[in-house]
Image (cartoon, rainbow, N blue to C red):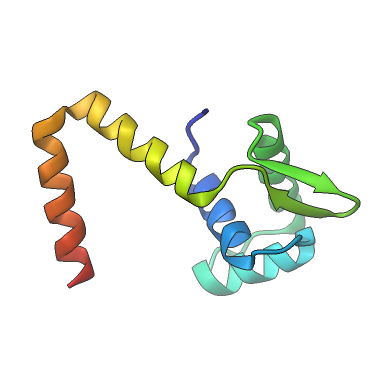
Length: 102
């Protein structure tokens, strides 16, 4: 599974939260309102194209849907973290996540 950039992950987060096929114009509206990005439709088209190439989204007519479940992506990110930083650092990550939630 290819890694996502921070902005690609934001696009995917909206797709996962939307939980149904979404038009680029709807995606643009949600991203700009939620994350105050000021993106244009051409920016959305670029990110959707990249995500399509990476096999994260598919297009059905004029709407996009995720090809990868959010849980699968998060598990992959966590596994990559442990692979790079080791088991000891995973405890630090868990502690940081718990602090963020509190």
